[in-house]
Image (tube, rainbow, N blue to C red; front, side, top):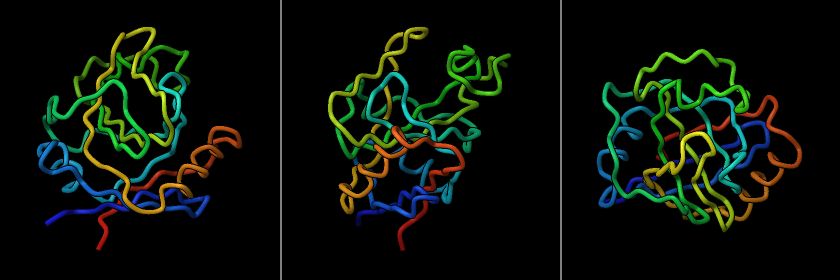
Length: 166
């Protein structure tokens, strides 16, 4: 039986539904599902291209590891990344914590890709493979337009929320 999550840009009032890819990424899907609901400020990708994401404190003691990874996510993919603060410690990223702690997996990035031609490479870190754990099945077009508005209109005061779909 498939499981579904709702992904919402709260301020914009736009949601989409994604099917969890339990067969392809069982550890990642279990980790995300068990942690829901999750919500935090949204960011728009600076390097990957057509991506919105949120950064969360790690919600499981050990990251799920690599499964169903990609460096070229397609429109509608939901991806999971685990970073330590040193990965995101460069001031160019604009995050508040630039000191780094070196704690592996201390930061989880949940991302939604809404357009083509994405490439997960970072000038400081190199290739950044993500675990594809979900695929949008409903309301993709409206969500893609809202994601584009985050890019052009700004992310300030916007949150990205992941919930279980009942």
